[in-house]
Structure formats: structure tokens, C-alpha cells
Length: 106
Image (tube, rainbow, N blue to C red; front, side, top):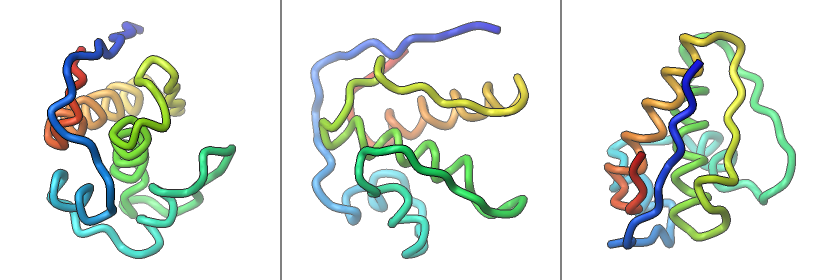
């Protein structure tokens, strides 16, 4: 397994509203998904079926937390059950951060 740390650079934008997130990522999140993405910074769990968008929501949650300044990228740990899923999550988070213009690369 390879770990790719995200390296902070100068931020060009910050996320302030869920509308900013939707515009940046181009994903029409449902109200339930937005509630999960913007939930308070505390332990939580998402239980949903296959193809329901869990990985997309996890990536958006990281973008939201980093983009709003709630956390730094190096404070985020995403856990999945397989290496393939971990690679997919890593890729989605990286692309989502770049699309959102949050200003972190790695």
C-alpha cells in the first residue's frame, strides 16, 4: 500500500455554503447526502447500499472539512475494506479537492 500525503499550497478559494460545494464538484447531492457531508465534526457512520454514492459522499466530506478550514488534509484518515476501494477513495478525494479549488495537492 502506498500513502500519498496531501501537501498544502496557497488556497485560492474556500467553501462557505453547500452551494459552493455543489458548484465546485458538479454533483447534485441529495439532502441526506448533504446532511452527512456537513455533519458536525464528530464520529459518525454512513450505512447505505451499493451504488448509493458512499465514496462520493466520503470524498465530498473531506473537501467540505478541508475547504471550510475545519481540518487540515494531514488530519484526515479514510478507511475502506479493500486496497482497490482505498485507491478509489484517494483518487476521488484528490480530484474533488482540485475541482473545488481548495488548493491542496499531493
